[in-house]
Length: 98
Image (tube, rainbow, N blue to C red; front, top):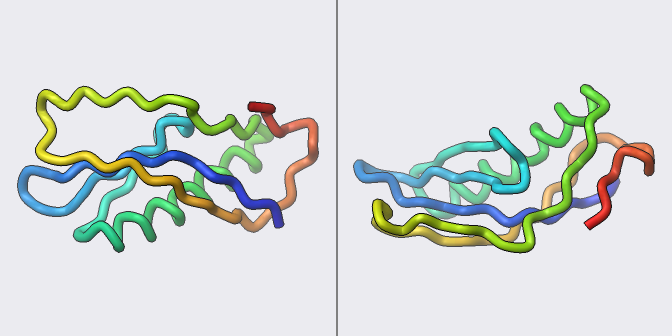
């Protein structure tokens, strides 16, 4: 199985926990109560998102080279890289080159 690495952004929520977004994967969002839980859920969300793209026969986008963060309204933001291994094989033609 092929692995994919993506940049993720963790933002601390006002009340508690973290919201996670994956800038390269439009609409790929999750959340968790702790950083550890958020990272685990991010990996799962990326795998599910990639599997959905596969089922729809869409291209897998390359990871973002830059991430812009509007820090005006943020309490705390962290950027991580995660590697996910979805449970499918993509034809070479559907992989987008960086």
